[in-house]
Length: 358
Image 1: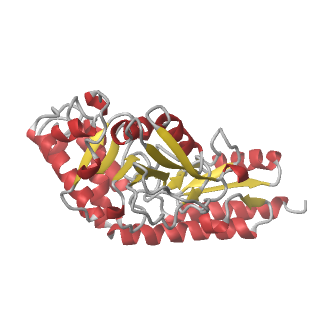
Image 2: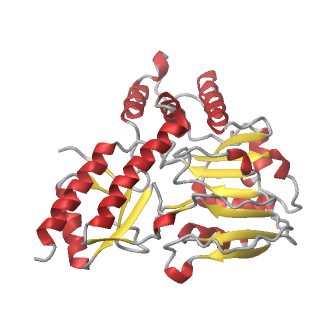
Image 3: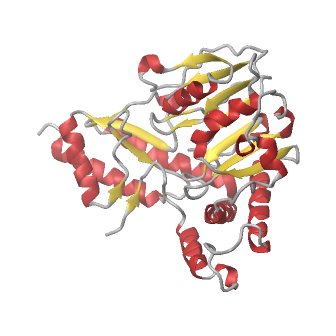
């Protein structure tokens, strides 16, 4: 049976990358050792790390004012590492509350200084992006989540501000063309669009660092990570390598322009079906729908359970919604082939025709 991977993360990887990783687990670059065995301070891994950093800057079109870090702890650790490094004890940070991950980030930041919530979408269950906001000009930084994996919303136009912007891009990084230089810090767990679980990408403009007085443990200090080349301790070697292979794949496939074209094509196909099939109910405001994570329900819970059973029967995994919101969700990251979305739409159409008005 052909499998269709709609998991929200860890999620689908390009087939070419999987083949390369599989070969490297036996013999990395024909050196006679596995990628799992090489030392992190060996010239073999130093070359991997250097190329990965170079490709990140190339794709983002960033200069040497930015540093690229590969860190442990997932994006969740960044919820506290960002304010620990950037928010003075007497300062204010501005946050947007557009879902579960933004709310968790707000909670962590509140331990380090004052947090001003510029806008929240909680009044409608985070089914839209609240664009009615004012950003205090004296804020230390502005934090937002570019794509809300759980709720299925996405920023399609970022705020215009002179306040340094920090963005959690865990679930839509490198899925579209972007002016990355508008951000002073970008972070993303790799396991959705740029690799496998185990490594977190942080890209930071050096000018925003060194402005807090508190003690920073070395493992949580961006400047220490920069000074040590992302190797204060042993980095997740294989996860960094998988990210390198995925970055190469993105460039080979046509770069961010092609990733964006595919993302729009996939999401338009699925949302068209959701809008036209009476049994299926998209939950997100049309203008804020995510190209990565389509969240929806069916008209009854019983039908949802039956549809999930049909998905399982047809090799479609990851369709069940996040445990905090329920419903259904189809995640369509960079490596998702259009054929998988076509298969899902065909199943949805068949299911609707079978049950509607019956």
